[in-house]
Length: 171
Image (cartoon, rainbow, N blue to C red; front, side, top):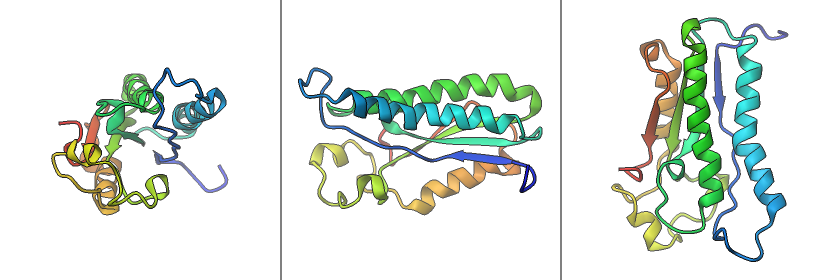
């Protein structure tokens, strides 16, 4: 490798096209396929590439969504499926890589003030915020703290786990 070794992989790319139920007549399948390609197949491709060069004891962390576990409102089935697949793949990868001491975990992040929800803070329907035990957006640092913990030595025996940092959305 040009820059040395790869000890930690954090998969943090995603897109979201939500708001239409699966029976909507104007679903754009190309958009849904792109969402699947980025949210799910991108994670899988990154993990497969990383483990070829990652030393024993490495860390793999994928950023999921509470919507991969809990659907609180209609119009999210396709996005939710792309995030649920990350959980399943990560659990399988944890089994496959455990003998190498490589941990594979998922952080199910809550809504944060990022590009994906830009301009939504304070404008979302009440049902969305009411579905959280702590009805607010996550601070970026709150999610980052979980990622840093999983990437560090104190998390060497945590693998195949899903850590919810989403204000109790999945509670």
